[in-house]
Each structure stands twice: as C-alpha cells, then as structure tokens.
Amino acid sequence: MAKQKKAVTIIEVARQAGVSISTVSRVLNNPGIVRADTRDRVQAVISEMNFIPDSMARGLGSKSMRTVAIIVPNIVNSSMAEIVRGAMSVFREHDVDTMLFNSEEDPDMERRHYEYLAANMIHGVIFITSCGADVDFPRIAGSMPVVLVDREERYPRVDSFLPNDAQGIAALYNHLKEQGHTRIAMIPGKESTRGAQRRLAAFQDMLRADGLELTEDLVEFCPWSMEGGREAFRRLRDRNPRFTALICGSDGLALGAMGLAYELGLRIPEDLAITGFDNAPEGAYMSPSLTTLDFPNFRMGCDAARAVMRRYEDMNRPAEYASYPLHLKVRSSSTGSHRG
Image (cartoon, rainbow, N blue to C red; front, side):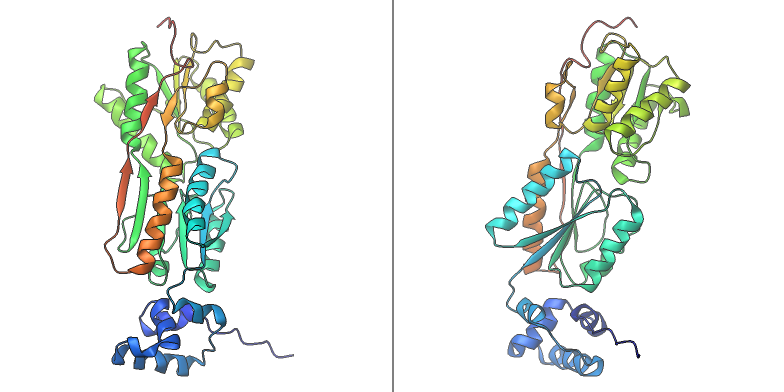
C-alpha cells in the first residue's frame, strides 16, 4: 500500500513565499488588502505546493488569535507554575486558549515540542527557561510570536523577560557576608540551563570581587528538584565539609539541601546558612523559614502573554527586552549566631 503524502501546512507555504502565516491567511481570506506582488507570490506558491487550507488556517486571516503554546521544563516547580498562571490569566481575558507542554528537563523532549510547533497551527509560543535544547528561534519567529521567560536569547522579533540574576545573587552573597560567612558554596541548578549558568556567573563575579576563585569544591550542579538539591548538597559536603553558607539557584533546591542538613545533624543557620532564589510559597512555612529573593513570577507571565498579543498584531516590531529586579527576603535560615 502506497504511503499517503503528508499534507502541506500553512507554515511551509509562508516559508516558501517568504511571508508570515498571517499574510498567507489574508491572501486566503481577504486578498484585496494584500499588496499585489505579495498576493501573486503567495498564490503562486499555494498553487505550486497544492496547498489545501483548513478552517483554522482561514481563521488566522481575521487576526483572531486562538491558541498559544507554553513550554516549561518542569511544571512541578512552583515558580514556573506561577509564570504559567500569570500568562493564562491574560490569555483568558482575550479568549485565547493555551496548550501546556512539559519537557521534564529533557532537551530531546523540548526539541520534539519545538517540531510540533513548527508543523501545527499554533498562533504563538512562550518558552519558560530552558532544559538545554538548541532551538531555532528565528525560524519559529518568522511565522508566529515567540516570547522567552527566564531565558535570554537576543534575536530579532523574539521578546525576552527575565529576572536580574546578577543583582539577586549579589544581594544574597552580600547578606551572607554580613552574617560573617567567608566560605560560601553554591548549587546553581542544572548545568545545561541558562538560568543556572547566569546565576553561577554572577556568583563567580562576587567571589572575584573579593579576590577569591571559583573552585570545584564550591559548586555542584543538579536537576531543578528537591531531590536534586539534596543529592548535590551531599556531594558538596563529601568534597568540602568546611563551607558555612550555601546559595541555591531555586527554593526547591534549597529545601532539598535543608532536609539532608537536618539528617546530618547540622543546625540551620548556626552551622550552615542556606538561601533559595525564587520565593516559593512553601519556603516561608519551613522551620527555619527560608531566606530567598522575591521573584516576580506572576508578573513576568502576564507581561509575556501581553507581548505575544502585541507581536501578533505587529510581527515586525523591535524585540522587547525586560529585566526585573529581585528583592531580598531575609528569614531565619540565614540569620543567627555564626561561629566563623
């Protein structure tokens, strides 16, 4: 039996004609508003590729956004869940549906999600952080709005919203120094992710400013989970039991480290000060409560959704970039008597 030929998509037509998918849709629905040369080129490609438009493709010509994809590496993470909640609240106001993709911190899974976006009728996409996949953002941005949250990529027509990691790490580091700590270690997160890389670079800058070097016994990478934080802390302690303070790249990592610290008989903060990063709700209810950074998760999600809506109306506007300040929330996991 002969294999059935795969149907041509509107994205392939747009790419071949060198236009956006919305332009193809206008040619299909309201050709009179499209410039004659552009209209003729698109119609020629449609004929050449034997493209048969479906109802969803026709709907794009009315500038009615229907579906936006949101891709996260770990939906269990409460910080990411708040970003998603913020984005969904904006889309809901505009009757826009959302599709949530969870890549489970797997680069191959993230690539599969990307390929799905490139081949299906999605009207926009928000990527939240990264699990390390090499995604061709310019390719997607040529046919739909692309917005990045906590993931800095500088491309034309790709908007980015991220926390000011350098300012946040500096606040945590200086707070620990004020408490008398001179041997500070770090669990930044998963090594392949941009968030972990930015936070580690900021930590290295703070050490360098104090005339210190970032050595292997001060850093341990791990997955973005409590179990990851727990096992990373175990490995750090095995290599270097002398550090007295620990900066973690997320509250989840910090809570995992705190659990093992208790099992090892360490007193927090007397023997070991621990800080988080993203103000997860559970951190405030730990005993001791977790020092962290106030992270504008919900606001970033809202702003990302609004950026998708704006870019859908004007695909050629300059890329938007926003960096959000982080505010130190000092709690009892890092304050108290320290013996030096």
